[in-house]
Image 1 (cartoon, rainbow, N blue to C red):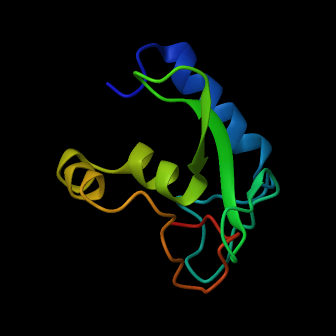
Image 2 (cartoon, rainbow, N blue to C red; image 1 turned 90 degrees about the horizontal axis):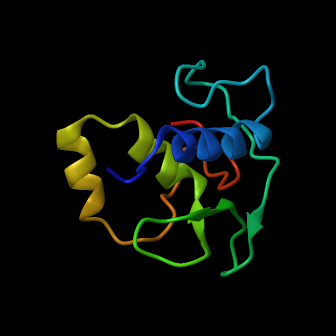
Length: 104
C-alpha cells in the first residue's frame, strides 16, 4: 500500500538499481560481502548515509529516504514490516560498520 501503482514501485527499484553495482545483490548476495552504495549520500549528520529521494504516500514532493531502511521495508514479510514501522526513522546501523553498505 506504500506504493499505489506498479509504476511507483518500478521508479523506486530503478533508483535503487542505479546506486548499486550491477554485480552486487543487497538482498541475496553473500553475507560476508558489503554492497556499497554509489548514489545519493545524506549529509544530515556526522555519518554519511546511503539515501534516495522519493515520493512518499500522503506527502507532496520528494523526501530523503535511507536506502537500508527502504530495502528492509521492500523485502520484509508482513510481521517484520509491522515491527520495522515502529522503529525510529533513522538509518539502520549496519553490522559491518559501513553506513554506505546497503547489504541486508
